[in-house]
Length: 472
Image (cartoon, rainbow, N blue to C red; front, top):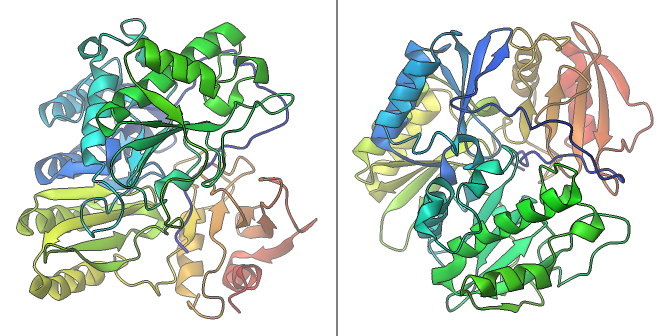
């Protein structure tokens, strides 16, 4: 099981924000113990080989020589000098990675990473990615949006998901989701209900109304942007300064009726959609290995241990992207990379190179489903070097027993930054080399299922996690 992307805890009370969110961006650097941190938004995870090379050079020449891929398919550079912001921004602008300074942090778009490559899904959503990003960065090009520059007010946590109909990114609890339907068109979903849920009324006592509208394919990107505009209007009305749709109080929810009216004012026809689009059940993220395509070309799916690559590993990935002929690299919300465009005869050699470089190329790797926060020395709040301990744990773990074990996340403190959603094994540092292992999630997302957990040392972590995951 790949590590599920991060979800934000939801409580019973509607939060009232006293400040804007502090998410880092390419222009707003975050100070950390190992230097400044930049988070570079890459809509849909889509990079040309040249853009990918720029990211690698930035990490190597300005940062600590490594790149992190986040749970939203964005890139993160650590270890930056405090005064390098202007040079970083200039390099990103030159590569087309910073098209709008005002909208830097709002370009959070995940997309089905195999869309258009493997014959799955109902549409190639890459077009939607480009269109939606264009609307987010240049609202003047869509004169029906209410208020110039309004979308720049979205928080850095607001998320769009563009699903080609296979159901992979539709399950990521995004604020606004587009799902391609058979025969053209898209379902527009707000508030992140699970796939298959029908149009629902506002839940008593809070949480945004959840429901689906069907729109034409050519209107899909504008409709998604207008859903975000509707959220901003409701957030202002509520006075809560909400960052996510699900944080809105019930009386200020983004309802189906309100959204349909806003779309109609913009000349976009919509109609209620009562259920999950298409006959296909939700699909898992791409497993590591070759992915055959209907055009005779193959894509390569690669997972990155703990979502991090060295400069040398990234150079190999970008070099293969150039050699494939597709000139493209796709970062995934599951902290992996997809390289399109390989001839079938070239896949074995390329996968061998990637495996030899320490990247994950087979679905039986013990690294799959294992994640960790930054830990020491990068985070002052961390009690332990969790990445080193997670690496030792993975080395002592065999992929056997349960066919789909629970994901495990190793955290350096009780904030558990970046932890997955759903049910997961929580390995929480309680000291330099001590951990408490607990299964968390279930009906209440963050409630532990075991009352106290198991206290172990770092050396015992692999066995305790294996027992909790059901892989012993």
